[in-house]
Structures are given as structure tokens and as C-alpha cells.
Amino acid sequence: MNRRMSWVLKGVLGAALLAGGCGSAQKEATEAAINAAQTAINTMQGEAAKYVPEQLAAANDALQSARNALAKSDYGGALAGAREAANRARELAAATAAKKEEWRKTWASLDEAIPKSLEAAKVKLDAYSRRRPATMDSAQLDTAEAQYEQLKQKWAEAKAEAAQGNLGEAIQKASGLPDQLTQLKEMLAIKP
Image (cartoon, rainbow, N blue to C red; front, side, top):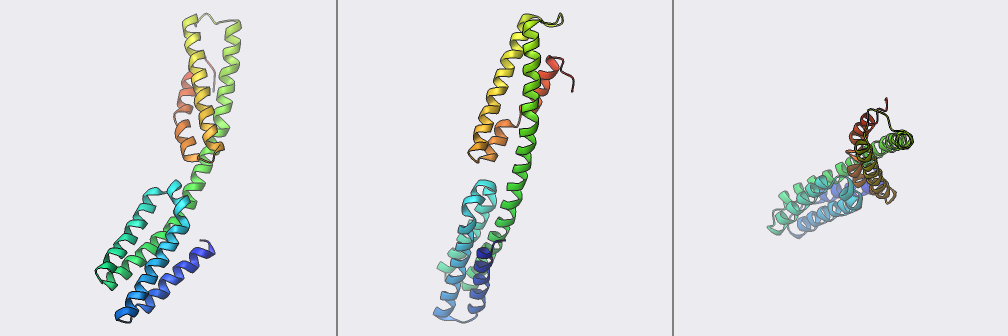
């Protein structure tokens, strides 16, 4: 967890301790706790929206619950909601880092395997265009070539997304490619 997030969460806890008073002091302390939780969520907003949007929504829901309780002068409920929102903000940091690493590894694996498979298919297609095997008619070869071009295009789209930093989109675009390339390699009699 980064230092800023740590300070924000300490602020939430400090505000919670101050909330032990009554009247306007209690209201101010509760508002401070809610604002600190909001700051903690805002710190993670951009990356969390990209990597763990459902957890970000849960954190924002907890924060809204705290605000609703505050509007009803339910300081205890508001403070509990602020604590929950702050805890969810802390979880956002960990979940975002984990998802980011998972996507990085998944993309690295795809980026290693798919170009090799595409290259193997291209080499075989080039060889077959010069001398088609007896087991393959020209329609089958045309189908294989069209499939190769389609897969190559999908891979180019996935690479473009990755180059823009959209690993989630890149992985989604590339998700079916390994299986499709395996089928193409089987059609072309490429051994694993």
C-alpha cells in the first residue's frame, strides 16, 4: 500500500476516535471520516476502474451508505460506513495490484505463444502455395489462408490495444486465438 493511502486511512481512524463526542463535534468528526474515505477511494479510482471495477463500485456504495446515514444524523452508522469504505479502499489497492500482475503475465504468455504459432502457419502456407500436398485440395488451402489472415488481423488488433496500455481489452481480443491457431495448425498438419 502506498504511503498516501496509509495516511488517508490513518485519518479515517483518527476521525473515528474523535467521533466519540456529541453534537456538532460528532458530526464534524464523522464528516471528516467520510471525506478521508472518499480521498482514499479517489486515490485508487483510475486504476481500480480499469482493473477491478466491481470492487470500486462496492467501495463507492459503502461510501454512499455512510453519506446517507450522515444525512439522517445517524453518526454511528455513518462512521461504520466510513470505516467500511476505507477498508474497501485498502482492499482496492491490493486487488488492483494483483489483477494488474495477472493481466501482465497473461499478456506476456500470449505475446510469446501467438507470434510463434502465426509464424509456423505462415511458413507452412507458403510451402503449400508452392506445392500443395495431395491430402489438401485448393478450397481447403484457400480456407486455411483466409483463416490465417483473419487470425493475423485479430492478433494485430490485440497488440494495438496492448500498446495503448489496455491489457484487459488486448487479452479479451486475443482470448480465442490460441485455440483457433491450434485448429489451423492441425489443418495444415503442423506438429506441436
